[in-house]
Image (cartoon, rainbow, N blue to C red; front, side):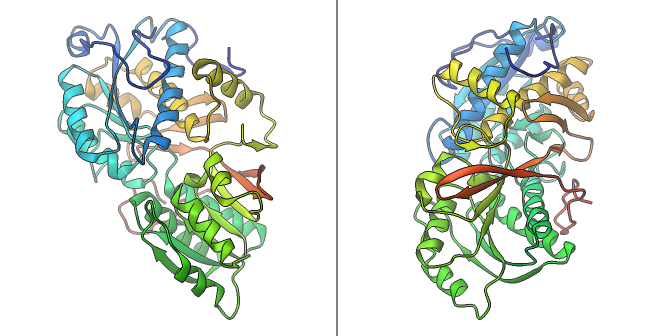
Length: 415
């Protein structure tokens, strides 16, 4: 049992769960069940088991299945089980669209898409056309949640790169760092928006961005010229914000240190995890990022609820989670189940309306508020600031932002 209150005690049962992998073998008749009153909630998982997105999909997906198993063991959504069908999309956008089409043809009530806007978009668009809600398991780019870019049936179970960038800016400014340099990874929409919102929030607070540079990102990162330009500034800024994701982001940070750039580094949640320590080495220090939790590879949070989550995850999968992204999948299921429990039926329109109902659920990181009619992502969740010093990660605090700056990109979650 987990060490926190269960929001659905006595209400959700899992039909066929392969706990060792996200690839499940359950057959599905969810469409007819839904049409005849919703005897079960059928959820299709279109996530990556391989490729560059697998590190961001596998653990959140496994944690989501763990939460489904727990909820089902407690009796279901008003006695109705959650049933899962899963397809491996291999980090390929075309495969995501194909998988979504296949899952919808099998009668799913809701689609779960990968942890990235670029990768989720084809699947979310297919679900939108069928008026079936889709929830990205942890896509950060705010376009996943603005209700207009992909549509009003599209959601994300993440706070978003707008929140991550703004939280990093607020934390650094409150720490007394008032000048920054931005090193921007251009590989995906998530990193672009993290840097954009960091800059907007930092300047809104009164900070100064003294310069910026960019690099392509991807698998073969080389920022030697960017590091040289930063090191060559006449006056070094208080810190550099590295808007990137692992493993490329960790490689960029290592190369900054190897080039002699010694100022603090701040970054978004996609720098989180054991891989950062593995890549930057045991001498790396003065690195900070806004993640979702501090556990396993990170010390100092002292949370019984997080410890219980890790224990249950390890018992289910014989391994501890390697990043805090796992929590987003776990918490996503709590939010979906809460909405489904309030929905008139499991039809697309009724589920969508319930998801938009500002539900707050208890999670291992505290109460988290999900979704509104205009903002289809997490609308209230603290970010955890993690410090890397001498090859060790420690809890540096939590950071909330009271508002997201408007950068004129159509983000309906911004102020």
